[in-house]
Image (spheres, rainbow, N blue to C red):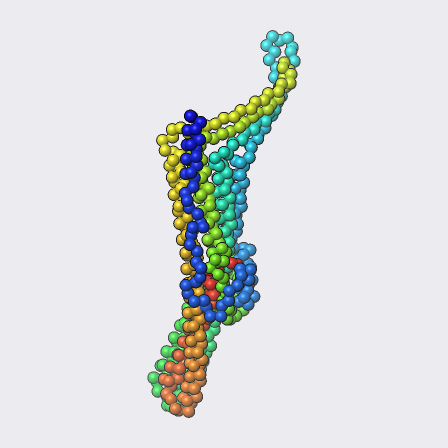
Amino acid sequence: MKKALFITTTLLLAGCTSSGLDVEQVTRPNDWSVTAPEGSEMVAADNLHQWWTKFQDPTLNALVELALQESPDRLIAESRIAEARGLRKSARSTLLPQISGRASASRRDEDLTGSGGYPDNTYEAGFDASYELDVFGKNRNAFKAADADFEALRERYNTVTLTLIGDVVRSYIDFRAAQNQKRIAEKNLKSQEQTLALVQDMNQAGSAPRLDVERAENLVNTTRASIPEYNRIENNARLRLSVLTGKLPEQLLATLETPMAIPGADAQPVLMSPANIIEQRPDVRTAGYNFAAATGRAKSATANYFPTITVGGFYGVTDTLLLGTTHIWNIAAGAAVSLIDFGRISGQVDAANERQKQAFESYRKTIVEAVVDVETAMNDYSNINNKRYALQKAYDSADKALGLSQSLFKEGEISFLDVLDAQRSANRAEADLVQANAAQSESLVRLYKSLGVY
């Protein structure tokens, strides 16, 4: 009767180890809800490795490689993987027998009568062995949890790497955008200063009013005031690159000193299917491993309800003057179970089960965030691309209008105010186009990063 009661209780408790939660229950997307960017193509993950090289910028490639080698964040994540590997090794040891040995030697003389007896040499050596029979899976599930923690940290390392690459590329685009904006402002300033000098000469000759001089000076000073802001943005982007690559700011000056165009504005976007992205993204994989770890700990905690069964043994040898060589050994088995703990075990099990639920919901949320991340990047790229196309046409028109206004002014057909308006429009259109090129490149970076491959 007692045996039957024990077996029934064990089976009932074993049923408590399953919460019914499974990552396969989470709904996954079948298709995207937003329209794919024009010109994009569906590719396999293997075709996305080193996607930043598609921007065809050698300096950018060098900065990314430098960050991958020297970034403190990436090296910290790498060290955490090694830490988790050690913890996993420690958890695995509980599944194997534990063997220890000891040895000692002593020499003593207890000649109390003064008869001149010989000293007694004593030698002892022995081995202890113990093994916990993991009948109910306590240690086995604890090892599975440690193994899942290790895999989760490996995926976090991939997340850190992917984020690092994305930040390097975006910071580099910001640097080149500010650099090009400054170049355009300096070019416009030079042209405007020449126009101002011409108007000043005309004013002195009496063929232009003082008002035209003041308007020309206003445009010159407005353009000149924009250059320090571009300097600030350029230097801040360069300093961010210093942190990301783990190099001091002065060490990057030589790498960035050569002016170059904004990279990536003409690169073509690519996509993967929703199922492939869910499979590839390291944050989703991390959340899955976190759930597996929480499940293992919940099962391990539940196993504390069951008896702990251990088998141990000892073998030793002693050698003394009186007894000679003696062999000693023993084998023992034992079982221990908590009978009354005032809720200690049940509290641990309840907490572990709730942590498992939290991990499950976190996994479900991460999938939704991953899908939204990709679709947001797709939406941004499509609309920014359309905006860039319109700004390109606006700049072309403004540039032509500027040329015509200058010719008509020289022929006396229009006023100088019309020329200034044309200059302002052309300057603004060119600056907007550079900004749109940078936004286009950064939206492409977000799209590539959201695919989860590097």
